[in-house]
Image (cartoon, rainbow, N blue to C red; front, side):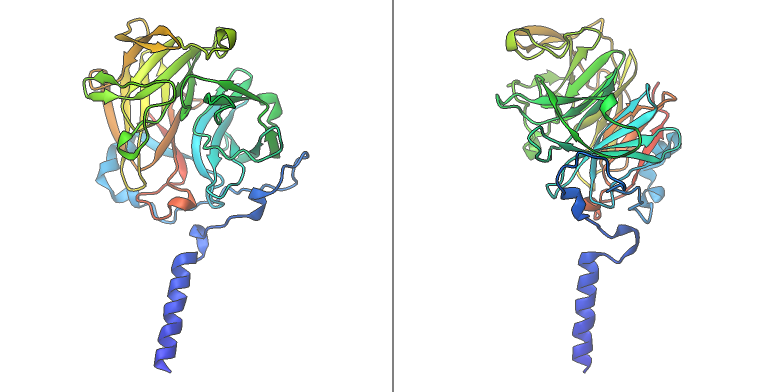
Length: 371
């Protein structure tokens, strides 16, 4: 009898371990995240704005004292409980919405989530689809609101060119649940791992970490020597005041106006002013992140980079331009400027997929790190 009871207890413990113990950390993957495209708005949201982190273990870690002294929790990230993994983020001044992009490991359509930046409320969700009706399941690493459009990282086109998709803001109602078709994609000269927009510049950068096989982007076959070693992270800057900034001549790829050469493991960036660039550097669910603040003078290029057959003014972001660093919790992703000019920091560690991560947080943080 005792042996039978022991076996039953062991089985229960195993089931509890694999399925979770209920409460906030229970993983819920709704079947309707994988449902076919709907041409009409849904009456209820698929995702929820639910906390997934029960204990804020980072509060007891001295490594984050500076980050916590400069920052505060700002927005609870939607979709985490339903296994969405947040990647890109952009604040839109014209409508006051904060947009967050996310993907799923389970072949569900990637999503863009909209929060009311003033109240923090989860206002709208948009599942992404291709013109043929199939689900768009891309990594959606970058997101940038520019003028009347929202740009999001897309997949390579039929010619193998990396692309970003342009979504009219008018196609994104500010309340409700919708399925959106990515009708317009634009080829760019680099893998769009992250996007950022500020001071009229759309920045498109690749994630580079050769130690784990994240190698040079398509179209660029060389690293650049810096004060800290060879770098293969290239951030292409397009001046959006030019009507043809994202359109190349005679079917060619668009040529950027500037190139930033950055360290490895960069997940996002923000430019709070014309002289400053802030980088989000992270990799791994148990490794601390670093936020790097560097000087930038677009009037004084340090070198040039060959892009599209042309020599483009280039700037090296290394220890020579570094002004300050702050250690943050693991898995920082995108950065964007909020309505008050402070830096918003997105984390992906709160996703259910990373429930065994270290120092997890399910919030976007607001940080005084702009100057």
